[in-house]
Length: 168
Image (tube, rainbow, N blue to C red; front, top):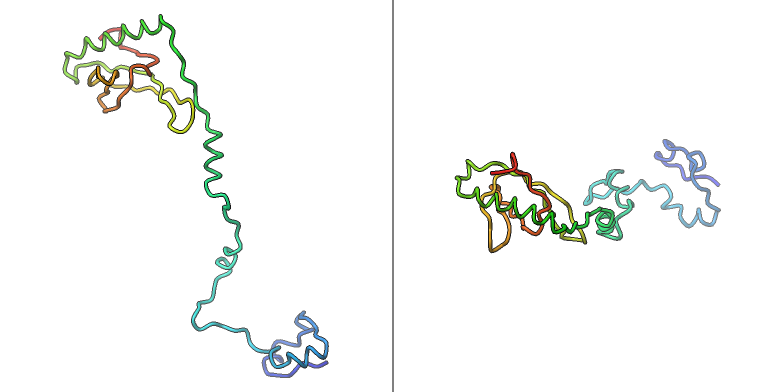
């Protein structure tokens, strides 16, 4: 079984020398005209890089959003702590001090530190946050405080109020 001699095959060597496959004589006769053709290079499509070819077979996210859903489930929230009556009375007294100081211009009001509960939008529970600043106004209709930053804090969500020196 001899390979058809062409200038190209002489440069490359025979199929068996190149580690190629061996054909039996019937197959060789049948496909002899195609065996030594040069590799096709498209004129219309550019050559694809190895990186791009590999990307075609890279794994993909069959369950889109699954990773985010697992991360959301793992996220921990805190439960809202219900205040007892004595704590509520103490906070009411501090609200009254803030309300009394509302007569002063905003720049002369002291900074207060308010710890409040913010409910989570996606799951049960939430987190305790602390706002530090001056109270711009006490909103009776919305039942809360508006800070100088514009942040609204509902009165029922307040867990603690720290006043400078205990009074305003």
